[in-house]
Image (cartoon, rainbow, N blue to C red; front, side, top):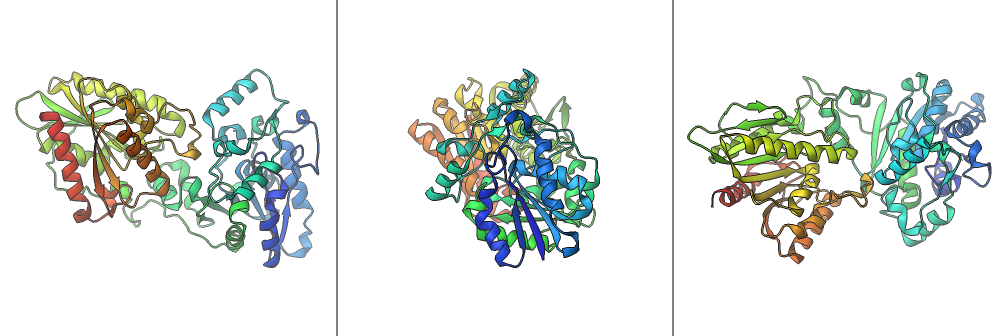
Length: 507
């Protein structure tokens, strides 16, 4: 059997692991929750003396306390911030560690502090300012009972569990978040498992899609010693579903779990590269900077539809979004209707990139409008997936030349895990200012609950504000239904949406 060494996330100490640890022990394993210096009451220390290195030493001490002669393999489990000291310790004791489990956390990199993983973007910026001003010895106060969503989804936490989380919370020494993680390299050889809490963000399918984009930085996730699990809960599974978490940890320790598919000739074609479900004219692209134009033959100028891809998409993704069959297919479909179809490639590579992506889209739209083959006074915008947040400015203050806005399976409010509370990129709020702008919304009936909730909020706000909203449903459609679902399920809705956009542009 195994020895599980459990390391808690920000503001939380060893006590949050109690129920999970009991279940691991009942299954025949050993479980040790590491008291972290300056956080746990068992190890008090002045904040100015506590940094990430302090917590790495705490984890190393827990590893060294396991008798090598026992024959039991050590599994290090890091939740949230806890993955940083776990990786630091595993790097220095790689020969003693059988597996590292990433529990609902990011992938820390050498030389990068845990501050980079703070989910709330505004708070992260504030902490960076404090660090730049030389303030490294203070503490970050724990959230109040109603503030935990800034750090992760509380889905699955009942009232009692949320009260307990709040009662156990402790200030986090700033040094633990500001001190860079230093890795010499041995940890790279240690097998790993990732546990994704799907109510807090992405599941395995979403990670597979990121790998399929072809970003070399994610290639390591496809190694045979890397496995993945899902838990249908929020960010604190040790409190919301300790039994399920214990079961997953036991399976991870045994080497079980889902393995990601590496891109290659023998792998199935990734969803974003599958054929568009429509025979469209093979019009050539006319590339202008970050915009591709598909112009039908004949006299102009013509109205145009500008298609805006979703994301985030890794910067290293090849081919780029404007060469994906879905985006090209829609642009050519618009051209078949007598319009100019245009695709804009923007730099939404991370959740923090919405501002510059919005600038890219605005510049792309102006480039399209400036083309002499385009009627600059008859433009439609069509957003997809995570690009839906980029519709915000156009809804809030629609220019006179914007005749229609469409969106397919969009994200229409920031997801909780994105840390964008207070962000201006919030279409569900902005739609109140849309006035008479027609909005065509393609809804996927099998959308993920988290994204579907943003769509429902948008529809409710549009109704309250008397927006001109047309709903086009794909009842058995998934997110990205064009290449995932049967054409007979998707084509009628796609045709209806396109015809509606055409009517608004030409009527």
